Amino acid sequence: MHNVYHLGILPDYHFKFLVADIKGVVSEITRRLGLEHSSLLLVSKAMLGAFFIAGMVKEEMTVSLQLEGEGKIERILTYSDRKGHIRGYAKNTSIEAKPNDITSGIGKGILKVTRWNSEKRIHQSMTEMQQASFEANLMKYIDESEQLLTFLSMGIGKNFASGVIFQALGDTPDDLKDKMLNKLSEMNFYPQELFQNGIENAMTELEKALGSKLEILETGVPVFQCSCSLEKIKNVISTLGKQEAFSILEEQGKIEMTCEFCREQYALDPEEVHLLFM
Image 1 (cartoon, rainbow, N blue to C red):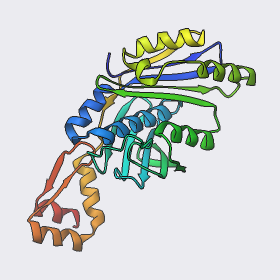
Image 2 (image 1 turned 30 degrees about the horizontal axis):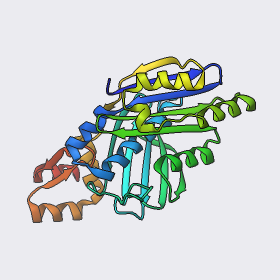
Image 3 (image 1 turned 90 degrees about the vertical axis):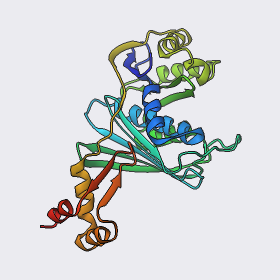
Image 4 (image 1 turned 120 degrees about the horizontal axis):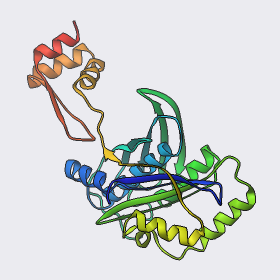
């Protein structure tokens, strides 16, 4: 089943987990944005990453992940709330990284994580992206910012875009943390193998490997959701200032803007623009 998530706990280890398949979301942004190759791979992982950070907390918030790198993709931005309302884009949509590029085309740079409460930014932090995989850089960020023992794995294929994150609870004893890490290190399957037959099968395999039941507390359906609107576009035009807005009107006869996340086009005629500055 595509587009599903399960949030729960491992009672035997005092860990929580979130496992998700967002293939339907990936298909939708591929259709809208024309993403392909490494650009598609990395946006898919970054959307999962934003969902994992948002989904592992109880508070209702939205999380954005911004990757700014030296590689050809240059920039990726994704958003998700804890219910899996997801969107994302890449500055360069068709980059195919070299086979030996572990960064998937983004290169070294900065990973910035911002938490939002409604439209208000409540916290922002960042970490330096190393010459490493997205997963490794995300775990590095979580370790530095949240200081919670975390393990995550992601697999992106033709028919799936899935991942799982395990995170120690605040009161998890050290011996259980060590036991969990030992079990995870003994696993002999790759992410592609783990997720290729669906997350229900992946959970069964994880239960066998860990020797513990994955107790589901919440199930939901991740969906693509863009937050653009005509009112937001009007606010953007207002911030341009009267002089620049009228200059664009004089040159083009109207002001057109396209949303980076969904490619929805907005156009304001001269009367609508003049009303913004009355």
